[in-house]
Length: 331
Image 1 (cartoon, rainbow, N blue to C red):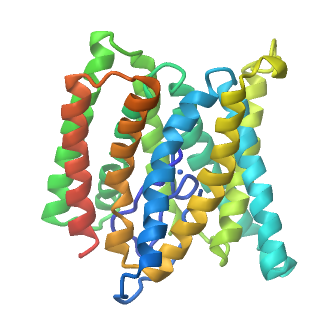
Image 2 (cartoon, rainbow, N blue to C red; image 1 turned 180 degrees about the vertical axis):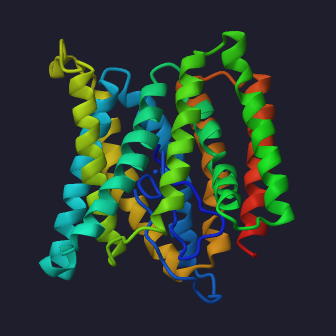
């Protein structure tokens, strides 16, 4: 899952990027609430990067798995991105910025397993059988799960948040109709739904565990841990058997490179900067823009069909997410 999942009412604002995020999406760092700031051209530029790049990662995943094994390609992506981010941190902030306690490292590993292996890994596997746009729409229901998790732990959601959860679940039911009718593989739909649950648990837990103080360091360790786990699962599944790297298409290699550089590094950096430079209510809008971008790109580039359940269910889910984000972040 490449685009991050939003925690609609974070105590310490853990934005869920591909990792902690979320996403599907690099790990979103934990950042304190910021006062209202003037929305500059740089903010809009960074927001545009998050909108388009994270929205396009679903397309990138779909192209990568055309000729690459799912878990091995996803694992390689995040290990590479994590190591690159580690090098950048050491270069820009010094090796001391990478130091963490044993508990902090354990927490980062756990979040990486939930978000990278469980959340993103299952989405990559699912995209071997379902359209990228449908995967993005299914994933956008994550904020609804987070509201439910908060309610389960005694945090009272707003009326708007509850209404958004209801809309999200109705939209999710409509989106499963293509799988029920046989238009897409129902197994892929189920995988994405399970991925959204794991992603939500990871996003919800990230603000309640002793994480590394440096959000970039936390993201790097999450990516590396989740990526190594993905490689392990790929090997256990036997994805290496018969794998011929010379048979991997050039566009799959290009897609993987795009996911590493743009999806996991550039967009993540833009998102991390936005958390400090822009209102959270504005930053959170990626949660309902990304799916629209993903659906449009899937239809334009891959010719993915826009059936009525996908259009209607997607509209309902996006409306629910918009309601959750707008009301819960004010609460």
